[in-house]
Image (tube, rainbow, N blue to C red; front, side, top):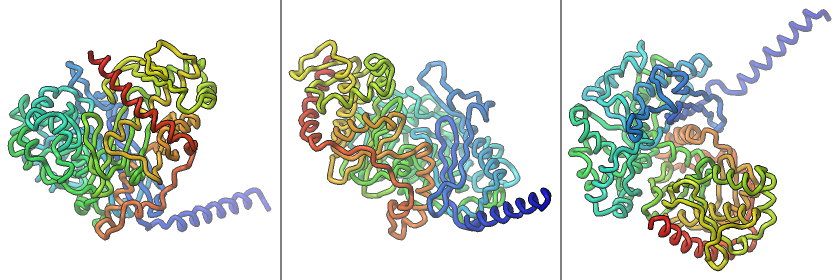
Length: 555
């Protein structure tokens, strides 16, 4: 056989193989779209009915939309407290992303439902008349051109903003104190929370506020683009505003009155997070080829969407071990406190999620590694393996920078008799750091209503989740098995899962039944038989010593 005949045969085989793969992939099978309007980029994931990722893409704000002159996706103003993002940047990013997807050959007509998430606490102020514009979008023009005159505030306040301290004080005073506000809304007053940003804008930019027809969160703003009309704020993202009563799942009258007159009209009624808001706008049908039957499921915040992406279940706790450590909790009976946040669950109307953030995470672990293990993670891990559970009663608090939970700073070391000491051997210090961090995570989780039950799982993510010895300590302190899960795009993936669930939720199908085909987390550590006794007792001492540290720091 000649070389040319072999080449023709090879090409024929390749063509047949490609055709076989296309047929096997069922090109008309349904897809579900998840988007994430995060701080630095807009991301998208498409999954099929078996929950396999079939497409993903992103738009980086700083580099791909450089005309908006953002750094890290934001504008930091001269006072260093005010931090905003241009709303038109988010819209132009969506234009760019959809065109990328179209060029990549994604068949939009296969998408049965879409949902998404937005960075929590960001707010969008629609100008009077914007609803009419949304309802009459011309598919021959880009969204950012069509909507360029639709906002009374061009730069949206985002989660990094801390310029509303006075409004926080006013709100807490109006409702009867910080703890009372936490009992109503799930959190004490925070500068970045939307209610306080609204209150500030009403006072500082009264004319712009008067020209506002609707106030959205980033999540409901993004849903509005797809819906062609104002989308409701969902319960879960609405919980991060200092305005929603997390138990009645409606706006708190006292919080609304303390923030702005007739605010309920500007916000619209909140809806369950799994609600189908309606079909996608005809704009997307005609411009990109979406099906007229494609449904828009309520968008939510990035943290609730991440909980969905992790598929956290009742009793579970997720610990993200990154630059800062974050703890996500699934809880049934919340106990709001002055620290942490309680949100309505994005996947179960009867449940809640809690969020705790700890600033001193991996950077502190790296410092102790450098000082006590000569920069070697292998030696760091060996020290954890060679020291006993409970560390001989030694307890350490490592707050290299001012901690969020609790509000304390400095390094504080205590021996087994609760006497403060100045130093330990390197091995003792390494275990004291890791045990102390995880005792703190457990203590503050329990204060928000979390309790370790039979069947409890700990899901570990983030950079340090690759270290088995660190995860063994986590398993021992929580007395629960630890699983790892790859969550490089958890909010995006969670949004796609929620899009799929939204179509069947009204039929009584639970979120977990809807996503049961998703990849399972991998078991990496189980608690030692003596761990419960050791750490239940140690936790009591830890709580008392933390109070001493707080008193010392504040005095």
